[in-house]
Image 1 (cartoon, one colour):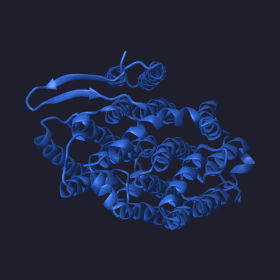
Image 2 (cartoon, helix red, strand yellow; image 1 turned 180 degrees about the vertical axis):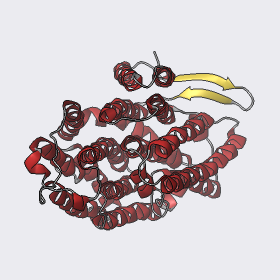
Image 3 (cartoon, one colour; image 1 turned 180 degrees about the horizontal axis):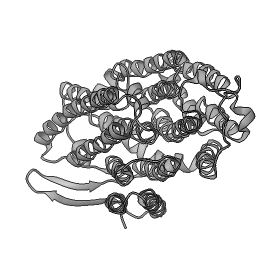
Image 4 (spheres, one colour; image 1 turned 30 degrees about the horizontal axis):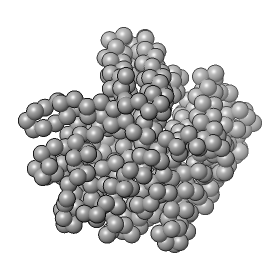
Length: 480
């Protein structure tokens, strides 16, 4: 039994969902999503028992390309994030009606397949293929089932597509160059390359362009807010909860170990870019009147802090970044889902047009408050564990990085609680706000349960990812 089983389940699920017809599509997609999640947990158990669940097979002889999937603690953690969030996201959509739903749900599973492949691939070309494949379904999900004016939506989605595709081409060029040097694109072979400082700098920058756009980091973030706003909530969840983690994960897996000299030489610049994203995202979020846009800029601030943690090149920085990736994945999906629940009742995302929800739906208000507090890293929530570890790692590099990075907590608390006050506690809206349905309640409780459980007991994830991160750090600190 190996990790290729997950990819098979998701890919077969996408085709079966499409063939099942519009009436059954959502339920079939959920079944396959749950099957992938269950299989991931079983594989995790095999991995913890010391079994080899990686997969490698010769794929193309000329050039020398392998179908290689690496299952270590880091990739298993990201695989679990993908396969657990996918059925939650599918289930959260059950309160909406989608035209041509068989295509909609098939694209969700296909996107999950591509993202899982990106986290598992350990051959450069295979990784690049999965990386680009993930872009196709979200393009159609946002374009066809998105919100607002069709022309504006088209502009936002096309901009996103071109930006990410263009950045990825630089990464492809870097892979071609390294193949000429090593005769292989297997990760372990690329790690053995003895590249000069100049070569490493160009490779580092080529990867950086691809990852900075995907994460996104400023000034490569200009596509994000509009796409998050225009995409259907399911698309926004997939983008913010999982897809942007592809860039952060890839920094740790590919960029830093392949170009450690450049990473060490320009560490302060890239930590500074991450911190700048924290401050910029928080300040812009303060001015937002649209709930989805506010959450988009809040996400920009949080991922900026995660990126800063990865570029510290310390075990605490990498570990905190991975913990925060997973925590952010769950909390941002929960927040966008809360925004969707409000939209279903009020048909608006303007914060000024909400209000008085607390008196009509205390259950929803309580769950929304928990998600807001988790987002601002309240102790006992999962986000606190990740953010505290990242800030600690930044303080080891320079105390001012930690102080500036900490603004994400201070400013985040201000704009998130201000938003909560206007939306939940303001004057009662003239429209009635129905209490949460059973499906909505289950989705919210599942997410909140994960945030509290790992907020109080993060050891399982820490134990899973630490050995892999130590191996990567050994590679980063090797003598060239």
